[in-house]
Image 1: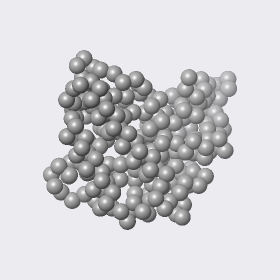
Image 2: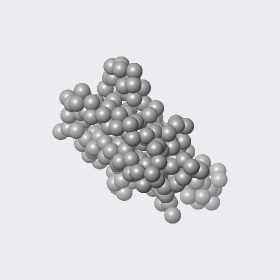
Image 3: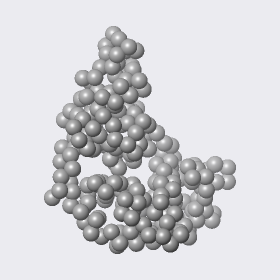
Image 4: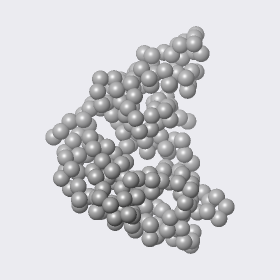
Length: 226
C-alpha cells in the first residue's frame, strides 16, 4: 500500500516532474489528489489540512530531510531529486517486465530512463557530430548543473543499470531489439553501445564540472559545497 509520504511524492512528480514548486503549491495539489488523506478533519472536501501536509514535506521524517526525495532550492521552494523521480516512477509504473505482443519490454521505471536518453539533446547532437554543452550532458544523466554528488552517483547508477537490464532482456528474449513506448521506437545492441560511448565521452569532456558536482553534499535537504 502506498504511504502518505509516497502520496506527497507522487503528487509532486505528476505536477512538476522537472520544475521547481512552492510548498504551498504542493499542499493544495496533495489535497486535490487525496482529499481523504490530506483534507481538514470534518471538511475533507472543502479545505486542506496544511499542517499535516507540511510535516510530510518539512518535518524531521519528511520526504526532504529523511527520504531526500525533494531538494530545497530556496525558502519553501523545492524540486524533485533524482531519487525522488525514480521512486515515483516505480510507484506509478509496473514493476514487472512485460511484452506487448511481440514487443519485448522492461519495467517502466527503466524504460523512462531509456526514453530520457533517447530524447536528450546530447544524444541528438552526438548522432549529428555536434558540440554538446554541460547542461545538455546533465539532462542526459538526469540531473542539473547544481545537483549534489549523491544525486550524480545515483543517476549514473540508474543509467548503467537501465542499459544493462535492456541488454540482458534482449539476450533473454533472443530478439534483436527492445521496445521503448515513450519514444515510440525500439533500440538494439548497437544503440545501447552508442549510449554507453556517449556517457563515457561526456564524463571525460566535463571532468572538471563533474568534480564540482561530486564535491556538493545534501545536508538537511539543502545543497552545500565541501
